[in-house]
Image (cartoon, rainbow, N blue to C red; front, side):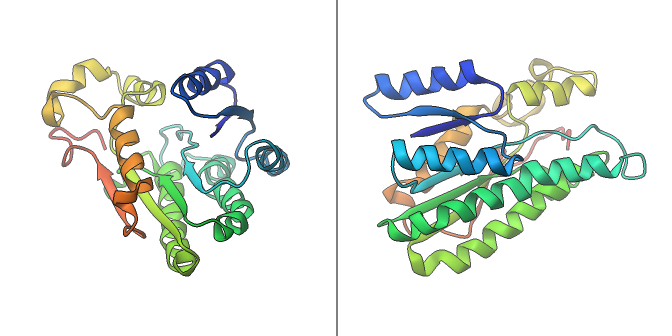
Length: 224
């Protein structure tokens, strides 16, 4: 398994260690998804060291700055599209030939429930996520004949460093919000991972072109 990171090499190494300790094979690869040369080099290294990639979980992301469309400068729109749309599409295009040759291929795009709510002051982020969802649904149709499944996992607010930053920007904390969310908590990474594992498993072999919301049915007091 290839674990990609941009700056968090220590965290990536921890994931690799967990996989190896569980009996798997893994290695970490540093590359920014928005750097096409770095991505190309990474794909070459992965192919040489680990072989054909038959499962891609596209999870790179960054948040926008919380400004209105009028006050957001165009470079921010471009940056969010580079990370959430153009970079992932470049990576997918590089991996598709190998996936087509495999017995089965899976692409799982991690998006966001924000695309449903389209909240104020989040346009660069929601626009980019909506765009990659549209691309994923298209690829699902194009690649079905090649045995490739393409699905979308769309969590709500997730208890991650990025989620904490989003909440703190509004003057709150994840802990304070927990009681206002379904089941008394916000989504955690394990919830997202479980959905990804299902889609990539044999149980998900007849599922493609779908979008799975992981938000507990929607927050009772929405921050979206």
